[in-house]
Image 1 (cartoon, rainbow, N blue to C red):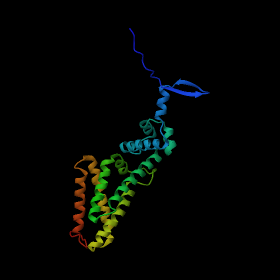
Image 2: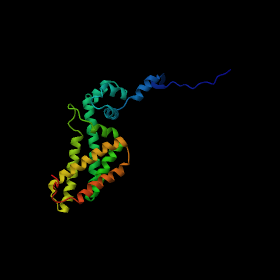
Image 3: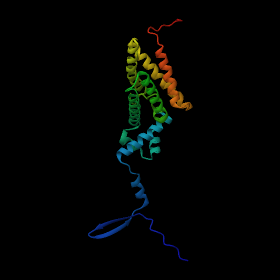
Image 4: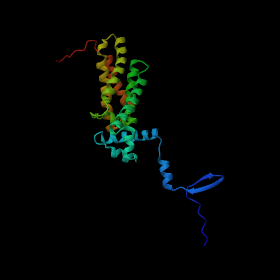
Length: 234
């Protein structure tokens, strides 16, 4: 019985020397090792993604360099080469997440009426919570003392300052004292943040619906805000 000839499945490399072409078989192991080799920028991006996922699941203290290396399928020296260690990788993850969400918030409040800006800021942050759960989990954790000082608290403070500018305009238009703007801004940011944490546990209703309620509560409260608030039962 004749068997059909099987095609040559071995990778074949050829080179020409002195007008003569030579061929050599390349092992699959060598080919595979070359296919897995990433450029430095690609490797850094991979490690950032892997680190973000690990930190989100286990926290900073619960994540080791060994764990990250295992997930990324690299050796530990690769992580030290790119980031200097776990602390350096964590700092990059936090910085990138903060920069991203801050850009989203700035875009949301860059134009429109004060109410529109409040609504857009609420929705922008909740969209981030929904679309980037690992990033939000990392930012929501307590930052280790040895890591970057940039934490969720510093991000929220910066957001509150920016939203405070919106409240200044709204209070000025209504004839209110603008000194109270930081109070209302921090109250709004804190409300959005804690509602965001609550939403990650329940995943419903849709973030658009949640943003409507937050914005309505904040804006209706501002609309009926007395010019001289007082404690009536103290």
